[in-house]
Length: 310
Image (cartoon, rainbow, N blue to C red; front, side, top):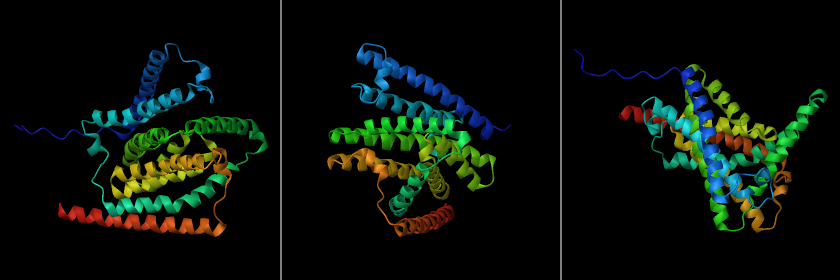
């Protein structure tokens, strides 16, 4: 008689994605209910539509609360529950392997040198014009973009260091952990079990990552960032590096907004300013490619050496 329990097989990736979607819907509903209940207890009245309008005294608190709960319910909890459903620790299921300082430095260099070329792509994306027969869609997209921009600018208004640290936590740290767990950890991992081509897996995940933000005039730079995070995770076999890269990208935006306000520069001017000549963007693109290539070779070599030592 065999008294050794066989290893439990992992569920089909199709079932995992379906389960993940159901968890996300349930988590979003649950966290919004909790959020609305919490806001009611805090203010002593039901949430008013005006509270979601930039300029309202309650806007910042309400927006930060709902955005944070969205990160928890839509991204973080579903990813954790998926691992739990597979009877595995999230740190093992999603490959939270120990980081190495040289790879972390390379991630920092990647994010720094890629900023100019991402700026150029962002400006190019914002000049997008749809054909005449799609003008109603274009007007809707611009309205959604303006609405998102107004919300972002309001949240990024920081009066003191406490506001800055709050935004670092809610805009940089929380999304970096929650979104990377969901997209690179859960979705990319499941797609990786469905398709043999890693490039297809990474770019498909990046497309979903960018589309779900529903910001059409920032779709391309977010798509490229999603792909970059995906390749970092795929090559390093550790989610820590993509979380770190995601955090650096978001923390830079918060820090830049803080710097602009300290120097009386309007936040609305940030996307209208060109900082480099054309050759600066070219140099940025070349350096980004070279550092990514070195990161790939370095992480792959380190992985093979680790396998041999085991």
